[in-house]
Length: 116
Image (cartoon, rainbow, N blue to C red; front, side, top):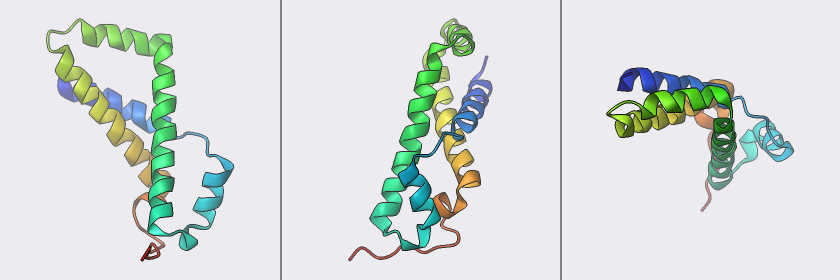
């Protein structure tokens, strides 16, 4: 196992968890994206990222992840592999959200209102 393979596995895992279920508030904010201030947009981004990260962490309690964890831990460079895996998860979640919610994560279709 190498860092690129581990990063790719993390990215795929992050993409999977970017399909997190939205709260009613998040759905409403995305629908009314044009009316959000910069602070509200940042808060929405943070809430989406937090929900996906929490879902990913909860998913570590199941067998497929435990097999991967064992495989990583058996490698002499496990610390670097865990770092690559975490980086991949973060990138996968962001990539998934950019695809799923471009108006929130790519700045398309809107310009945030000024907060001052």
